[in-house]
Image (cartoon, rainbow, N blue to C red; front, top):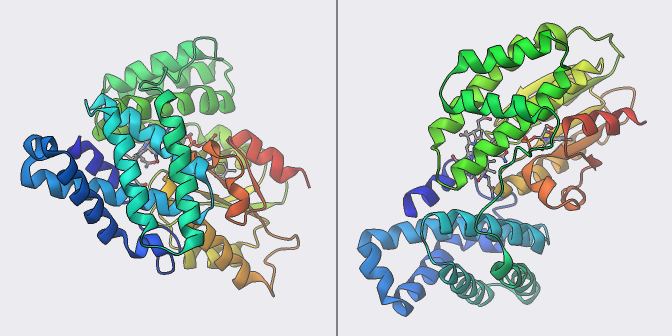
Length: 366
Ligand code: B12
């Protein structure tokens, strides 16, 4: 368990508002207190993992605390319930008894509630309560994310097979040939790359492949996307401009790159900043480009607070001097926003879309 769960921590930054977040501020103390109770209550844990295991359990708990802090800050029990659902699949594939997860969340609730003020404690109870109620019925497996009856499922399956075989040449040839034969670039994006990458994530989560496979699949897909650029940049211009970026700390960049490319195909001038962009540079870019849309992406739930912070910073900075001849609209998207459809409101965005195609439709509506 521990090695994989520790991998989850890789690069995850503290929740937004970390200085003022009462749970993040006590993260270390909470994690250690929970693990101390667990080891006391379940002597078998010590027998299983030993002293080194205790540190690794603390490491795991730090990330439960971080996700809890984010859900509490957003006032979203759904967000924490979805995290618990994800952990249940991860843990059960590692052979960790599911009952331990439930009890561990109960201990976490009691430890946190004893350390925060009454309104925060109420939110903590709501978040962990939502997870505990749903936990017994949450699945321990996920179905394949390339559905049999989805459009272009055959291409997606072949593409995934080539990626898992480490064959970049075959992967790119099969997409380029289909596009040459008339498949729309939009279809390649939404019906081949997107489901394949999500399936790669499922395979990682269930222990079937490694992080290296994830990196390979990403790099190979970005290579094919680049080869499609002569078609992407061919659209007639519509004299509108947008900026597409990941929030600071966020490494998942393909989703927002697809968003930028869909805007480009609709004739917009796009300024794509990619992964992990510092908030200050994003604010400056919005000013410099006279953009009318800022599209912000976050995939890791622990980055939702950073999205809220960025939106607040952009609005504060541009309050007296709107950048273009239209009011700036801020759109958000990515994994946590897809899981909890109302989350975009709590971060202060003007809108949300669950796919690149819908993002363009929303932005073009006014
Ligand atoms: C590739 C990948 C990586 C790569 C990313 C490389 C890169 N350069 O992008 C690497 C290896 C670095 C990585 C790292 C990690 N990853 Co990762 N990763 C993925 C994977 C497999 C694919 C991501 C992707 O490209 N998806 C395809 C795109 C097209 O979909 P999308 O992002 O949802 O985007 C669409 C919409 O959401 C929307 N959209 C997206 N952004 C925006 C923005 C706006 C404004 C709008 C309107 C719309 C919009 O439009 C897009 C196009 O239609 C996902 C699986 C998944 N389900 O996505 C896991 C996944 C996201 N990763 C996960 C995890 C845990 C991690 C790590 C913590 C651990 C690890 N596996 O290494 C680290 C954290 C890194 C960090 N600090 O950010 C988990 C997250 C689970 C959770 N509960 O939070 C996932 C879901 C895997 C899983 N099933 O467990 N990962």
